[in-house]
Image 1 (tube, rainbow, N blue to C red):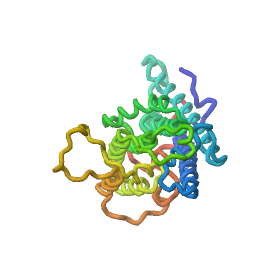
Image 2 (image 1 turned 120 degrees about the vertical axis):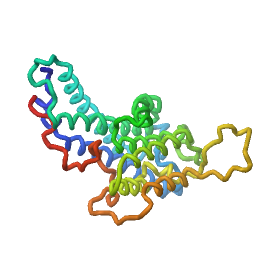
Image 3 (image 1 turned 30 degrees about the vertical axis):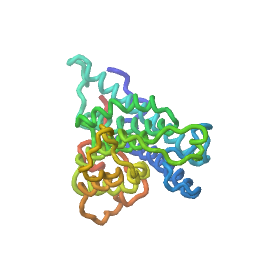
Image 4 (image 1 turned 180 degrees about the vertical axis):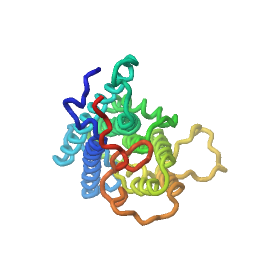
Length: 308
């Protein structure tokens, strides 16, 4: 049998371990975005993109914001390492000869394997990529994201939570790089990359269409208040024409990205519903990842990886 990660780290068998670590990392990223956005508002930069409010040229910023960002990155790295370790163990067991005792995964282990591959790993990689964008490491972030983007847009077997997190990443990646005086907020707001904004709307549509009922309403409400969506929900730009040299006067006025964002949410959540107790829309933190099947988290078995 291959070495078992759970021998030294038995908590890796628990789905709730991955949920909690992800939630802590996401909370810290959310708090970072909120802190930076609040500081921009206090400085009279209410329309400033929160992703770029920290000085990239010197790597400086408020101690609180930079500490939150660093901690979120550490949490994400830890979770990716642990999830990869379990996936490698599951994979090695599947590759064993049929007569090797204990090769097959039990039902709880199969659920955990699905949870890791469809939600935990891609969602955490997207969170990490968003942190890398803030740090100016865009090329590295894109290399991490591209395989996930391809799967989401191809309607692969990923959870709706992963699609939503991809939308958040695309919004962050839409912001232009800043340097020198621009990084210190001296110049006016620059245009966002419409290709990334279009990708964000596509991913958000995939997320909303992948969940139903109360969870869809909760997700739509969260998108409206999520600071990671702020640049999209307030964007006054319109999609650039594919052939700008050949305008068509008879075409109706194009919707701004903010209008398209609102229209998308209203299409999937047209009627306001009072938030339930402890619903993610009623909190001020991003929700943790859930099972890809859409079943409540409490239904996931606590003993997902057994003694095999």
